[in-house]
Length: 225
Image 1 (cartoon, rainbow, N blue to C red):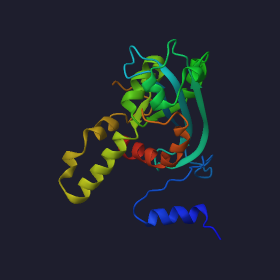
Image 2 (tube, one colour; image 1 turned 30 degrees about the horizontal axis):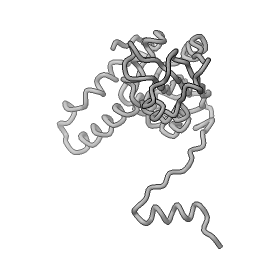
Image 3 (cartoon, rainbow, N blue to C red; image 1 turned 30 degrees about the vertical axis):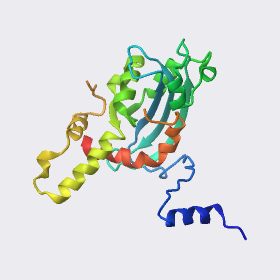
Image 4 (cartoon, helix red, strand yellow; image 1 turned 135 degrees about the vertical axis):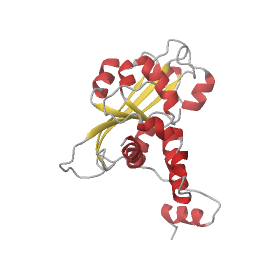
């Protein structure tokens, strides 16, 4: 009898020479409804023709909305995922196609529906991106409403939190050395106050990031309080 895929994957991992990942199935709900007050967050991701928001263009936008409890960091219902292509009006550089997999043919004749995006973002309190500095510069230029939202970076802020927890656990005087990323997040304490101020394999990765929503909301809870 031939081994199953699960058995083969286990054998590879146990060899110590391989890491095996499996398909992440999106979840519609992470916790059953209850009476706690909920806020809405958005995970966003953009693909662009380059790194300069004054010159380069967004060619794909993905958004995933979900409900969460700010006090506990608990994730509840995933409200939906949306994705748009946009024709930049010129040929996509070959290196960008190599990185993103997006071709001129895929975006031809398409445009992001700004009105629909603004409607989706209307009740959003928290915006999450994996490399928020990159996404934010493009999105706030395109959609000014995003300048009024709280932003969290699932790369820099989560890693900073881990480093601080390690530091706090090993040094009683570490409070004075909490990374500056925490301080910038803590400045966003008022849920609706304005804030002054590339990472995916395409926007489909937003759905795969559902598995990390709990940790991201937990970071917002711990460091906005």
